[in-house]
Image (cartoon, rainbow, N blue to C red; front, side, top):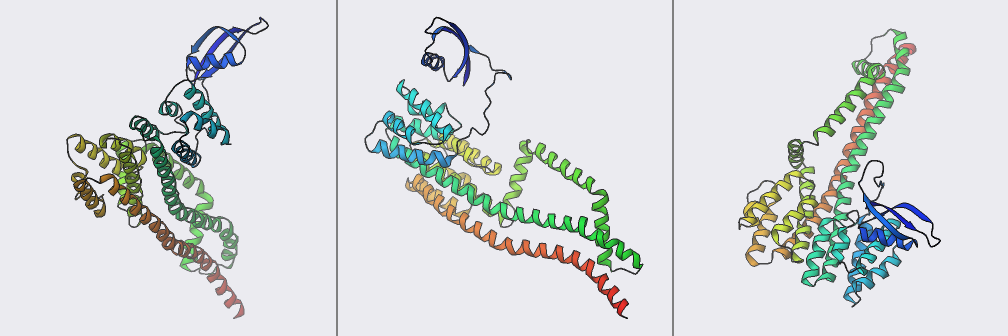
Amino acid sequence: MALYTYEGLKPTGEIVKGNVRGNSLAEARQKVRDSKIRIRTIIEQEETLVNKEIKLFNKVSMKIVSPYLRQMSTLINAGITVLDASIMLEKQVKHKLFHQILEEIRKDLENGETLSACYRKHPNAFPPLLVSVISVAEVSGSLESSLAQLSNYFEKSQENKSNMITAMIYPFMMFIAAIGVAVFLMVKIVPMFVALFESFDAELPAITKITMAMSDFLTTKGIYIAILIAVAIMGFTLAKKEPKFVLKLDTLKLRLPVFGDFIAKSNFAMLMTTLSTLLSSSVPMGNALKMSKDAVSNTCIRELITQCEMEVENGGKLSHVFTDNPVVPLTLSQMVEIGERTGSLDDMLYRLSIIFEKEVDENSKRIKTILEPIVMVVIACIVGFIVAAIMLPMFAMYTTIQG
């Protein structure tokens, strides 16, 4: 929202000055008038670091927006006007920020603005893809069905992202736990036995010597490892700002065993869901492909979508790009070709999205099933190695004392 400075008169005749924020000059004027102040002057101020509006955590989750879209669709389908439906839903919403947004939307609707224009003012709640679909739906007269489709789309998107995060975060956390256990044993437990072993001046097993050397290194020079890790993280963060590096990294991800197939199908599931939603809402293929890129996280697959855009602009078909492309699953290229041939591409894409979503869910469960015992074995090996390094010389000392 822009910042406006005003000067006006109170009902008592007192001159007052102040600031107000608004999406437009008209909205700012109305806010001042609502405070019972008669405006003398009102001027829009340039945004600076001093007066810039700062909002933390101002993103409205799609978990909140999706039910709203479904309820909006139901009310409009029941014959209720967009304005009346907005008033009803504004009263029901309890989320503070989203309630404020709906309040502003209601005021804009009362001023004669379209629903898509109202949504466009609030990108923190309504993404560009949603606004574009609503804009097309208002022209084609299919607003209620488009709202329902968008609700389904965002619910599926959230579910896909959740499955992907769940599958990826579990092995990562287990790996961190394994490293933490190993470092704790090396830094805290092993040094307690070093002095004991050295006092006997006996020949130690190789496994014990290796463990003691690692423990000594971590204890005395661990700070260098921490610095090296920090530098590596910073370097990786900076490198991720380079498009070429990100493209190579995302291409490498798709080639990983097990994970590569999971990542590819997760992204293609999002792509198919988005495309089918947009095409069924009468969005042209070229525009649909451009919007769909925002739903895909893998840069390599985004490059593929860009190729599809160019092909479509030149009068070609998606199947021409998908066929024989190593990134594209064979099922996808074949079914897209059939959909283009039969004239039912949007329906075929929807069916593909369901197939890929099921495969992603199955792959997610399979990855967890495979990785859980592997990570547990790795942790057991690390702990077993350290315990063996401590216990073997102790058994040897016990035998010597008994003998």
